[in-house]
Image 1 (cartoon, rainbow, N blue to C red):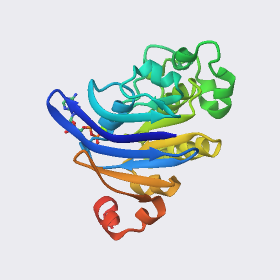
Image 2 (image 1 turned 60 degrees about the horizontal axis):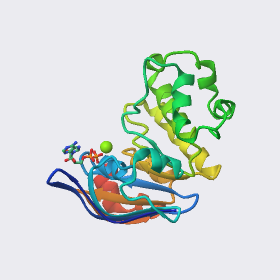
Image 3 (image 1 turned 90 degrees about the vertical axis):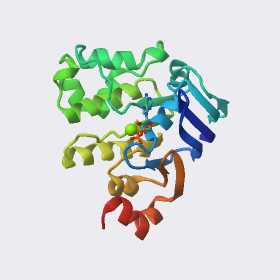
Image 4 (image 1 turned 135 degrees about the vertical axis):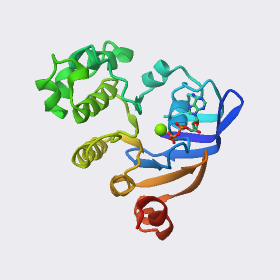
Length: 231
Ligand SMILES: Nc1ncnc2c1ncn2[C@@H]1O[C@H](COP(=O)(O)OP(=O)(O)O)[C@@H](O)[C@H]1O
Ligand SMILES: [Mg+2]
């Protein structure tokens, strides 16, 4: 479904990603692991045309989307939950959701459908997004991305800054969306939990993919456990 080949990405003359190749199949959850500064966000942003200088190839659903404008990538059915959530804090929950459906105006997913998935957002639909709790804001960020009716969702550290209980909620939500047929690329630092819900994983270090494989195999790999799980 998503095929990234030999991707290089640069901030002016500084190369951040080196020859990165990865794929996500239909209805798969694939996790991208890597320590802070490895280049995970740069990789995700490269897929949405946010990094001005890239080379390599990004194919989504058989279409070459390399360097396409973010708005057009979303129209192709690839949706992003960005690292910093990037909600509009002074707008209501409902208004934030409507903006998520903007790129597909006309057939934007009905708000009611989203509220069935996230009942807490219905209760808070007239509340300003900035007044929601951290967990609720993350749910809103995910719900907003779903408003574009994607066939694949990319989440950049959705559990960042959340308490362990809420981390579980968010990752359970991700697993549930996948069971409903959505393909997922998940960037996570909660390595154990992320691998538990994933089919496959890639490990990015210093802008290069250094390992890839079956999530369960990586979860029980001594080297991975020492480097990422601390036991
Ligand atoms: N706008 C930018 N300009 C220059 N360097 C950047 C910029 N954004 C990130 N970087 C650098 O790129 C590297 C990868 O960052 P990032 O993709 O955010 O990593 P991660 O998401 O894995 O923590 C880091 O060394 C970071 O300092
Ligand atoms: Mg990041």
